[in-house]
Image (tube, rainbow, N blue to C red; front, side, top):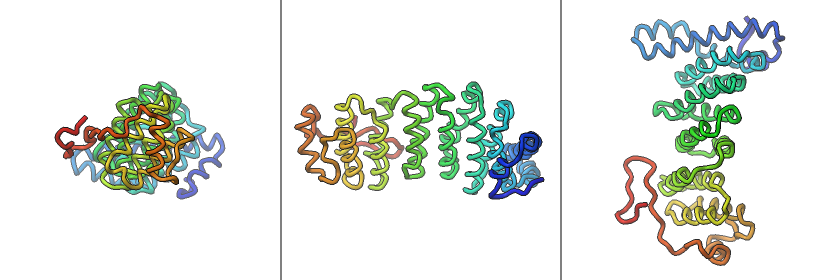
Length: 308
């Protein structure tokens, strides 16, 4: 057996076709054993312990790295069998390094799935993202997998990943998933009005100025810009939210400038934009009190008379 470790991917790429075809079944067997151990966690403690003793997750993740390098040699049938096994292992691994390795291998394998198999595989990705027991490391790594399904599944199925990816942003408190989200939104035909309302709610109920800035950036990047009047109205409404009075203000002001070149932008300050809006978009109501959007999480409530 070859030496495993950080060079796993490179090692896999160096194997010739004959060696690759010999290596893949061995890797498949090792990952199957790992998936068996994952399933055992749902069984008796005795069975779990017996199976877990026979599995070395570090070795499996190293094998998965080799598999990533071998992905071009995978058949569609092998990819179809490997993908759910890798996903099962990802969901039972807490070590961030191993999660990253396994998820990267799963992404490489997913790239070899047929269109039909990709349609069947995507729900398992969504389930991980929606599972309340999924760790932040797992959510982040699995969220990146969604990229691979763009172009492999239809717009409606792809759109089903948008809310789960919003959940990743909330959990990780960063915009790291925004490139994936933008790719998904573009491929699925644009963000729905309901999803725009959801983003406005996340911004309005942001627990901190930093998270308000995160949700402000997501809203700026993903809200439909055609027609531009509606886009400006959406961002102006977002500016009225109390959490926007901080880092999010600059994000939204620059978002307006990116959509309409005549908008002053953050460098000119909030007052300049407030003065600009009535001249450029007189139908956008600056004076109206902000609407309190429905809270995106339990335990929150709008003040009486301010709800949607």
